[in-house]
Image 1 (spheres, rainbow, N blue to C red):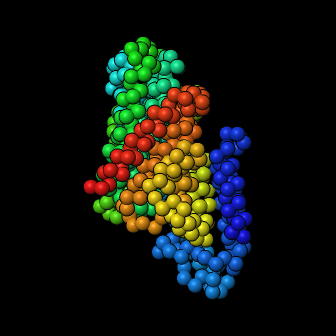
Image 2: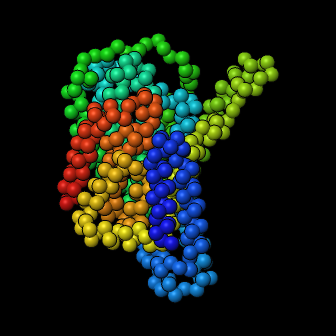
Length: 454
């Protein structure tokens, strides 16, 4: 039965990895895999020799001698435990996504364009890399990439020049997301899973992540595509702007930054603070949108309500990428099934024998995240290693999984969205950007290993 469960997981994993080839959204195999795995666990519960207690982080003693009723009761408790932990992550992400969409509702991100005045390519590269590094730590690397490439498309007309900038934005956004508990899904998983704390994560990863950006950008600034000046595209703005855009931008970003502070003060799960932040941002969004409502209704008197007042909260919730949320649910619960059977725990013990150096294992995890999705890799590592909170291993996992994906265009959500927005060719990225990302990854990893000695 265990062998069949592993085979199903591998097949589902391959279907997720090959979603572009199969033309099948990855949420479908993720949900199917999760359901089938838990069904098989339920059917074969009487035949399993091991059961992992996620709360105690150890195998349940004497599980094989439990009665069938006791085993099924333990199964129900374990499933409820994993559902609760997964829900914490999902509701946190839903809150963050909604705040970002509310900012976008008021066109708040256009504010960043006001900071970009130079026509020098090298200076422009550093500006975008800095914005990506900082912004991704606040609103996550995926959203930061979308925002900055959208701005990039408005100020750089030449696509061949633009894709070079987009490649470096991917590197900077992934590095920026690694040192923040809200900057990347995998880092958020480690934070909510009580593997890392905010202050220690920033303390241990800010310098390695910074080097992961600075070194590639410094090297790239001497390359031909970033030499000379460019013509800024002027007079092509067609989007509707809002006078409340800057206010909602700063309010929304502050609300998201407030969440780690709320968790530190109250010791409540992060999603509670995120819901509080969402409610505050929502109040101002409703107030500001009503002031625009009377104007829009005064103009539209033809009986067509399509341009009438719509709640910014409802509008923002309707724009959230639910397929991504369901994918996270499916993959996290699927990995939880393997963890519950003790497979990840026993696998980690075997891996320690084969490769005694944990640093090498984690760096291979980073390289692997460039090929396959980093969410299941990190989810698996959380079941494999049992080190206490803020152990160096968790911070190194956060760094490797967060930045390793930059080595391939399909290795991170930021890379995939950049690939879609700019139609970046896989092999073009591999030839021109991958080596820069690899250098940054290795330099940051070495810096981490050196700094943890102090």
